[in-house]
Length: 274
Length: 266
Image (cartoon, each protein chain N blue to C red):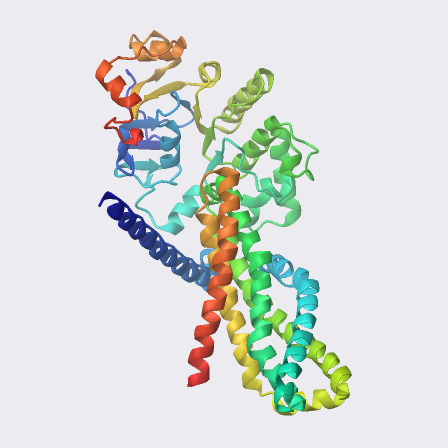
């Protein structure tokens, strides 16, 4: 972690702590996203990366800590200001989250319809331009149920960028896709950043994809930032947990015979044991 | 002892959940009204086209089944009315009984129950599916308020269409009763209609329509609250859809009784 403090980051997270019930999920996350960079948030299942993303999107309220997007604290500003701020960000959800009752074109146009006063023809042209970018040209009238997995992800990306956002969030953009399509999605994210100067936050557990697209990688583990740095810095990081993650080694379990017996007999003191 | 404690624990939790759901329903109602009245000021108006889509779904598409059931209920009331009045030899008084029970009770009740089964459950299923597919989250992060976009149109559409359907059900049920009465008692339909007009007061019809407006709010709120509480995938959607129908019909019947009690005594 050698980076100098960058000039006005687009996203700043300070000491973010969050709980689900009594369970501590994020244990004081601090990170910043610089303008025009692709930051990949990486980590295994249960590392808290999806929770962190939901906080960045303002879908969850933290126990303590601050999330600043484009200089505004998203948990403090008014609903109106947050709505305006959200027009400057785009989100591509893991499952696409396309509205199943609308065609692909209507899905992609929805932010334009709701937030602009353009005439329909202009909006259609703008939406089709984004569809060209993600290689979905000609699929206007299809319903989401008729699309393949890769097409859904690309349509979701098109919807996320239709308002030309300053920040793009992608949740597991290549998960569940075959390697070729996954590589196409990665190329697409790089293209979007280069062509539109967006800052991009990608949450993923796919190593290959992360190394390919990331300017910097943030490794999350059990609710903490284990490391934050460039691809080379992460590769060279001596921390054994990071090396385990990178080399797909299974974490050696610290075996406590008594705790093991308690777990097996259901007398464990942990919450999950009940 | 532990069993008692665990039972009390369950009762307490269920009560707290019930109170929370009522609170959520109230909040949603106020927000939906707020967006309807002032949404345009925040450049997020409730779209008339969305209200029409809901109205079409809730109202127009329910017309055939409402018609069939209303004519049946009307005839049924005439049959039972003539049968019970024959004990006093007062069959000719059946028109009064039919007129009052159709407009004050049966038309709003049967229409409400039908719409709860058709549209309340559909609303719960739609919102539940949208929630588990992250479509609600997608709306939020686009800066589109889900209450404004999804709840307000459903509320307005139902609030217009349920009373409209009830008026239709009034006509059709009274027609069904009239057809039976004219065959059974040899009274002409026009004489039956004249009698209806002289017996029915505007107040009776308003009583039924007022109830149907109340039912509309109940159906939408129950559907939305259940849809919003869906967890656990497709099975959860099914569970909450069933729950929404049961809750909506129970709420309708109970409210109906309270409404009738309060307004007939005053």
